[in-house]
Image (tube, rainbow over all chains, first blue to last red):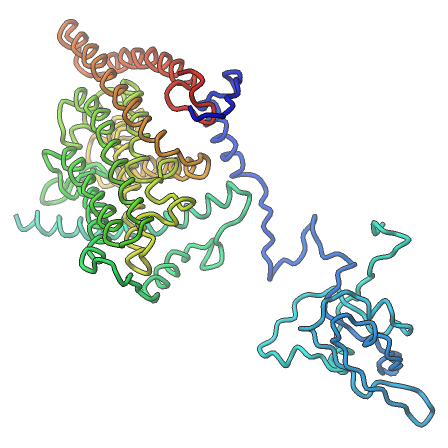
Length: 168
Length: 385
């Protein structure tokens, strides 16, 4: 016996390894028939007890108005607040004095998906979306331009609501 | 003579392929059963229910790069997988897998080689497998591989003794080392698992250790030794160790079925003793079922029990199983002598039941003695000493 090892005295039923072995065998055998928790991903994306949260912050989406134009008014708040500096915005103005984005690009590689852009947007134009499948074959495809942001169709994130912290 | 050669060649071909296919499916079964026991699904993508997964794995192993350590002993390094692969497949040759098939040219025994020394042949060949493992560990020039090889040799030699001792009891009852005669004797009375329960238990535990399966997979012990003796192996060489391990499992399971569970004997009927084509098929199925059950038990045990500590492994082998097998053999030999020589009983159901009673008494004593943590103790070591 090594020095300094405290030996616990336990009742036989706890130290009996034969019983422990049989108990373990029974347990693993019973698990053979239990329902499996595996979600078979590409076919199954949510199950009865797990689904993507509505607060999930994923791929961006730009909402559009009835004429199909981006709601963005190029106010410049989102590139200002973006901690990752991933939004590129060049504002323009039409003959009626309405501002619109000439260039609006989001680099999804740089983005940290904090959702500040959605939170700060006065027009509720830019949103983070409940969506995560954004793999591409080349790196430059990860810079989403305005057209592509408008073309996204996934649901937008509800973000965290301070008045309803648990999402009820 | 020509007939014998042709039939033997066919049998060798069929059995060899069946074992390889069985081994491939066994790797899949292992992964799926493990997954089910952990509430997962396991590999189910390649083919229906993942049945083609072994084919995909095999293809992968053929296409992978063969690496060879710079300082390895090149010759032995290449030889080791073969040494471990060949005996693993050789051992199955003497196991009868079905009742004899009647043909126009006479009955064909459903065993590749019905050697008169069948059982001794198995003991001899299966112990050769350790050379492959030790040489693999030695020639890799890697400390983990060497440790794995050392452990393998110590473990396999230790448990071989207990295993041999436990089967002597079988030979006492069967009066013959030919496996087909062992089966014939069991058909006369009850299966040997009844009169030789303890021998079966010892044999099963030793067989687990012999095939390096958990809870005795110390030669591999991935937590301590990376992958033990096959750390340095890749691609098909690694695969050969893998196939060897699994075919050892198949052989050990088949051996348990043959020695203790009547081999291809169908229980509660004597119809299987008159050879016919149908009976050959049915007995083959029966043999497959029994072997399959033990294979499942192997997998079941593997995914339930944790690995032994090395000193515990050695203590179990030398201080428990070996003395147990010796004492058991003495008691049983006395009992058989008394029943046979004094009362004049031949082997049959009454003798089997009488010996079964002896076994139950011994088993109760054994469990009472073992189950107090006196010999193999876990974290509470030293308490009883």
